Amino acid sequence: MAMVEEPLYPIAILIDELKNDDIQLRLNSIRRLSTIARALGEERTRKELIPFLSENNDDDDEVLLAMADELGGFIPYVGGVEHAHVLLPPLETLCTVEETVVRDKAVESLCSIGGQMKERDVVDWFIPLVKRLGAGEWFTARVSACGLFHIAYPSAPELLRAELRSVYNQLCHDDMPMVRRSAASNLGKFAATVEPLYLKSDIMTFFRDLTQDDQDSVRLLAVEGCATLGKLLEPADCVTQVLPVIVSFSQDKSWRVRYMVANQLYELCEAVGPEPTRTELVPAYGRLLRDNEAEVRIAAASKVTKFCAIVSPQVASQHILPCVKELSTDSSQHVRAALASVIMGMAPVLGKEATIEQLLPIFLALLKDDFPDVRLNIISKLDQVNQVIGIDLLSQSLLPAIVELAEDRHWRVRLAIIEYIPLLASQLGVDFFDDKLGALCMQWLGDQVYSIREAAANNLKRLAEEFGPEWALQHIIPQVMEMIKNPHYLYRMTVLVTISLLAPVVGSEATCQTMLPVVISAAKDRVPNIKFNVAKMLQSMIPIVDSTVVEQTIRPCLVELHEDPDVDVRFFAGQALQACDQVMCT
Image (cartoon, rainbow, N blue to C red; front, side, top):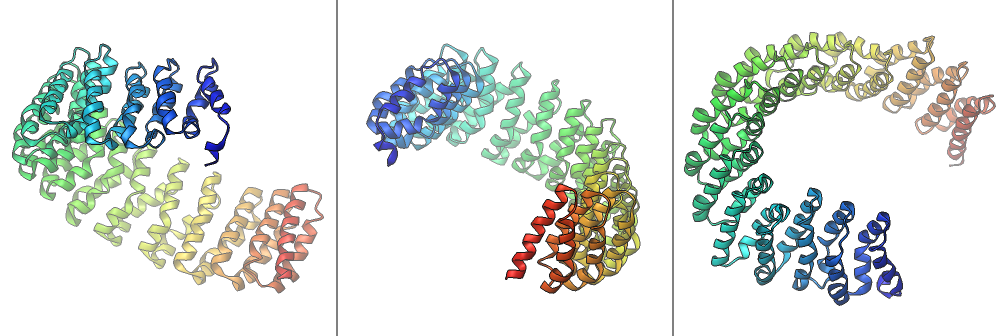
């Protein structure tokens, strides 16, 4: 490789940069470690570069983070997996630094390297590293150790496995809450590698101890492990050992713990089976939906569809829907928004009858909510309800609300409605659309907000594609052409944009007969912005129409614009004329 053939003095410079006072130079050097390693070769990298990095006492977190990241992919540069163990010392040092981000990256790199090492090397080098970190004097080393057990354990012989379990037990009872937090968050990964016998005894003992910790930050991380452990255990063991813990946690004095339960509960349902879910977890979920803290209700509300999908429709109707109805009028707008983002997904779960009787009134209430995010979330998922109750009922019940939202004072709500219109149009059919929604689509072209006018133009294009060119010529284009007379130039500009979008859809003949004359007349507009947009429109029409139209109609107009006093008009007219010339040449 070219890199290897380079003289070694640039490498010496790069190594010197690692000792430089300028942090940027040190950072650049670290990010080019692979270049240094390739130039040095595998043996010199092992004997010179890696020991140098191990002794590097840089105190800048950004440099250390870059080093931890680089070393994770360094196995090819030290001679492959046979020599991977030489990378462990510098990463072990990085596992003890104070900055959490650096430690996490070092642990991630160690896991990557350990996962590739041979079993014998894991026993000889990796497991001793885990034990040293686990017994480290500083809590930082012990925090990092917790994330390495799941890599070390599978390769360990029986005696070492027992020792590793013992070390993990000590970490679960460490004096420092940060260490216990790390033990709790990594317990699921470690448990997945432990034999079933010790999973039921040792691991579940660690789990129970962590769930009774006096620090809520430890308990909430233990909650995260509930679903993982539940999936590893047999259903019967899960019911006896994990279920009581999660039910207890759903009433924990710390709202953060209850918040974690609300996020995790539906996953545990799959592990324990239908009957314990109905008798134990459904009541717990109901309590979380009615929790005093808004954050807990938000977490519970956002999972309502997933939870309903696990339980039977009857259980969902009897126990969860009453809570959902209360949440739809919750005092917190964020709770209502969370509910609105998922509630439409309940329709396929509950079926047509329950959706019409119980969900539809809630949808309508949320569509009229004062908070725009609530209305937006409902609008964006209307198609899920349509699949269940059918378009006739949907149009009768929801269309009045949609028409009302089309004139909402918040432009983002109007924008969401516009983006939903083509989907609604395809479901309603052309006759219903013309009768109920056609006028709205034209009305948006005259909106005060540019984003609405732009979306309205794109909307008309999509409708023309849906209903066909004949429909567009009859229902859209005459009304669009009328708007070119608007006294405000911004609205006339919107017409030009709409024409450019519709022209490819309606085809050459319709473009030449109905739209091109309007664009040509707009070339005499008094506003330069209109005129240079005309030049751009004419350029976009060149591929659509035939060459005689280009020569006889478009080119003379562009020649006139090319002599306009405004520099921008002349520029765009010049570009369009070049496009004309290319067409004429071919």
